[in-house]
Image 1 (cartoon, rainbow, N blue to C red):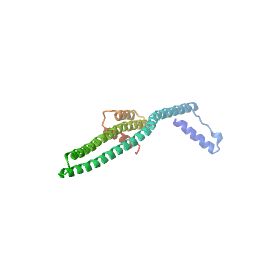
Image 2 (tube, rainbow, N blue to C red):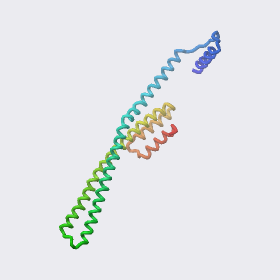
Image 3 (spheres, one colour):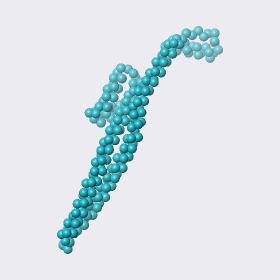
Image 4 (tube, one colour):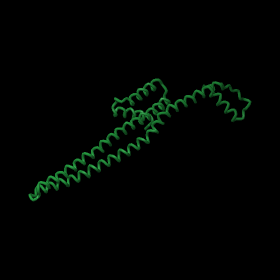
Length: 203
């Protein structure tokens, strides 16, 4: 390969200098074409390998964004409902407390006001269901984001192997990919692996 490149350089210099009679260059054209074909095929295979996880991440990302907005809206709604019900409950309790100190207020009125307080607390309990729903959606969103991260890490691993296709690097990156996708690994451990991989790209 070095000889071929040297021959190409010599041929180029001769043409540029107008020394056409000195073009005594032997180039293995068949070997060059074969090598180029192998390189192009390798690039295509690697690009297809990267395309799959990137496409999957791209398809899933809009869903994750939509889920995030839904979770935020639901949590905001639940928080407002709890705060409003709590304000009403406090007002009812203050009214009930004042009536208990007033000997002129009958038992029936006391029971009615106590019923209002209980109703407010039931409203607060009902509002908790919105928070439970928001938490469930948040859990689903976290799973979606973990999946997207897994696809992007897979793409980075493939690109990294293209930079260094040594056996040691391939084995190391294969283990890293397994560790990131293992369900029983802690989130902090997975994040450390991702950070290590990103650092190799200066990110």
